[in-house]
Length: 303
Image (cartoon, rainbow, N blue to C red):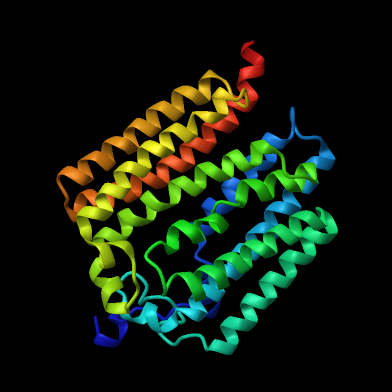
């Protein structure tokens, strides 16, 4: 085999743009939004409601992808300094600032138009406000200024269930805000677990993440405390009558598992355990919302 043939082929332009949207992150965002849509409908969706669900899903995905692309644009120099993000097309110089900004604007405009025409104006404005909250307030203002950036900025990341609920109901019910609260409290321990084993990266990039400014031990304590607060919040859907026993069992099992990871991380730190905590946090949120969905459809059949 020659040296030239052993070199990997460059990524296609399409794949470079796709990578800008942070697909794994956006998938979780859209999943939580879809759960919000399903919970807003008392029974099985009608044909017309399926149409709204499809339009809302596409619109929210496009705007979320636009926010991710704008984040890559703003942080291209920071990303280039960090091992975790140095592969991004903007950090590698594969896409120019004009190309990235144009792509972000196209996705945001198209997604907003779909939400306005096929869903409702409330959902469009809420989704656009989430774009501004993440891409501008969090990325441009909070992230470089305060170690509490992920706590304050987490409000925008917690909005997907509210967007989903609003798309089907046209209002902002307390159930939607309860789901928003759960994601809001989930975000700090999820992100700080990542920041703990990427502390050197953040320090090199000059970002005041909590492990950089307050040290590992303080951050680990915050992770543990937040997991217990989160556990209490995840019980609220059952206590308020929003869900049944199926969800309660899942919430307790997943919540206690997250608390165990938080406790272990506080007592005996290692990068391996921090990575495991971060991975578990993703499963925690995904399975928690999946349990809400199962409970929503199965509990009426069992009673």
